[in-house]
Structure formats: structure tokens, C-alpha cells
Image 1 (cartoon, one colour):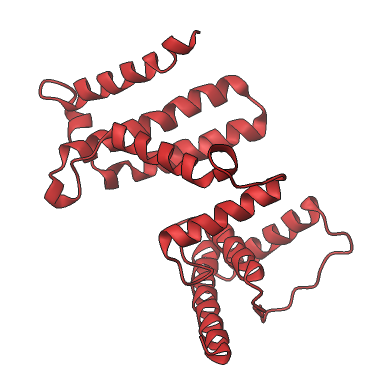
Image 2: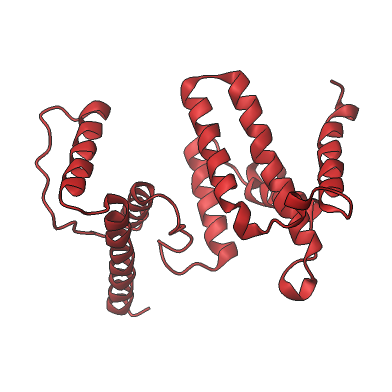
Length: 229
């Protein structure tokens, strides 16, 4: 494939989606909304992750195509919606936004900033992201809709980076050897306990994570008041 031909099939995908969503196209595609497609977007993302975990390159190629379809689908839905309802933008706007963001977040490549290590790059990225989005809390931007275990991990990670001492009150006896297998069995045991007790482990951890998020914000406010900021 030559440089000139790269992206040609992507444009074909855009044209196919245009046909499906246009009058005379597919009735099912025409009636879809952002909300109705959320479950498919999540499903395709999980299937992509599974292909990576399995080391299945053929499956990965297919699943990436399915994820790309979701991006094009949502972009076309937005294009069809009136500007007054938040629509009126399409796939070119989505692509343009991410191109601008990549250039802006890589000043060590496209500008004069120096970043010699991956850690330097990550630090620059987070600093730029925080400034761009006007975030005031370490937990701003953590998506609360993600799976509860990932949510809890993200919140604890953000609080640690911010130097906040977040106390998790429930004590857990650590296994003799702490590795992936031991932690996995420990988590499985907790889920089994929840099931025996009639507790939805996902919902319980999500609720606790939301409480943790509020606690982190309170700690930040207390710290800022003490510092006179």
C-alpha cells in the first residue's frame, strides 16, 4: 500500500454508512441513536481487548474494524442531528479533533519541549490535559460508568498521584505470596462471598467507589483550605 492510497478504504466505510443512514437505506441503521448503540460500542471494545489478550491477530483485525464502525456510526448520527441539539458534526470533525489533540499533546515531537523518557511524555500529557480541561480535582475526568473494579483502581491511582492519604477502612488479610494468581483468587472469593450474601458485587463496589470519589474531593478541599488556596 502506497502513502497515497492509505485511508481509501476508510473513505469507502464512510460512504457505506452514508448509504445505510440515507433514505432508501437500512431501516435498522436509520433508527439508531447514540444511546441505542452504547451496548455495541462496549461489546466491541471488550471483544477487541479479548483478541489482544488471546494474541489472536486475525480476530484483532476484525474487532478493530467493528470498533471503527462504531466511531463512524456515531459520527454519522451526530451529523444527522440538528446543531441546536448538539449535532451537526461528523467524522471529519472527530478526526480533526484527535489530530489537533495529538499534535498539541506531543510538544516534544511537534514543538520545542524536551521529553527523553516515556515517563516524561506521560507527565507532560497529564499536565497539558489538566490545563486544557480546567480540572480542579485529581478525580475529575474519571469515567464513573466504567466497570466498578476499574473505577476503584483509577480513583485510588489518581489519589496516590495527588499525594492524598485515602484510608480504605475494611482490612483484608493479604495472601502469603502476592501475585496475579493470588490477587485473582482473592477477588474471586470476594465475589463469591457477595453472591452468597445476596449482594451485587459490581453495584456494591461502584457505590463504594463513588463514596471514595467524594472523600477524595473532600480531602482536596481540606488540604487547599489549610494551604490558604
